[in-house]
Amino acid sequence: MSQQSNFIYLSPPHMGGREQEYVQQAFAQNWITTAGANVDSFEQELAFYLKIPAAAALSSGTAALHLALLALGVGAGDEVFCSSFTFVASTNPIRYVGATPVFLDSEATTWNLCPNALENALQDRQKKGKLPKALVLVHLYGMPSQMREILEITQHYGIPIIEDAAEALGSTYHGQLLGTFGIAGVFSFNGNKIITTSGGGALVSPDAALVNHARWLATQAKDPLPYYHHTTMGYNYRLSNVSAGIGRGQLEVLEKRVQQRRQVFERYQELLQGITELEWQPEPQGFYANRWLSCFTLKKGSNVSPEELKLKLLAQHIESRPLWQPMHRQPLYQKYDYFGTHVSDDLFARGLCLPSGSSLTQGDQERVAQVIKDAFSA
Ligand SMILES: *Cc1c(COP(=O)(O)O)cnc(C)c1O
Image 1 (cartoon, rainbow, N blue to C red):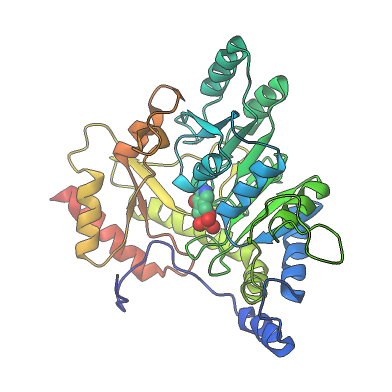
Image 2: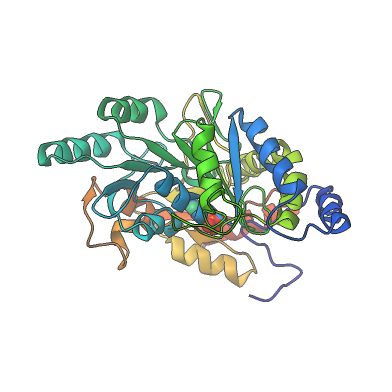
């Protein structure tokens, strides 16, 4: 896609102001590598923000998920439960370690993991004599999952949670930040996320030893000897000190970005309140979403489809995007087990994400809203 001046993107990067200063420090110190003061500070600042003992800055959210699974000892012959309604990056690392994914459906309130599907799947596996090694729990579009119910079930069966909070940095559930509920939490700083390092991710845990182990695996698992000596297969997954500089500047404006994204969502609701076909992603009491993307579904029987809306927006140089296609529908993953009642299929069929960047102007947002209004009055 070529850059057009009047094109409205879905979720463009939004710099805070101090990023170049931190990047400049990396240049001044000539630490243009995957270690350095920015990496150390970024890890500390992220852990401090999350009120969690430790964070490892990594090359991507996908790498963070991969390392989380390795740190929990997941491997061939193991099953890992995973939210089906997600981006493929949540699932691929389960295959990287040779484990088998089992997909769980969404519930209609949060669009995230359905506690009933989780309970049914665990009962089934218990009867069969082998429980999953972990649950990859995704908080989609920044919306918290039903944590109380999910924690109750996973604690009962003793299943560790890896929280895929790639889209949910800054969201809270009854005041607690997402990514801090599980044994491991994963974030992404890809260019389209709420804050970015141009590309990057992080792994956090209440267990500092787990984070240290992941950091070691991320630097080729070099044993502590005076020469190169290896007993474990490692990876090259660290974040660059230049990228970490961008991250430091971005963290300083994170709270502001959450406010701005929430404001974008609220403005859409106001601008489009006359269009009764739209049903916005709900936010239950006690749930606080960063509203990474403003999403809605169209009521059943709507005479305009999400695809038609997407094309009409594109004709006006506006990017929009369907909701994620569930993993149990992907050719890559449809042969794996699935538990649920097809809530995620229904969301996929009826949903759309609108431009949601924190830098979206009121005027641009009115442009988006007008296209939608016209589509429904045609
Ligand atoms: C973006 C994203 C990831 C992957 O993060 P990368 O940094 O792009 O590897 C994982 N899970 C979800 C839900 C995401 O949206």
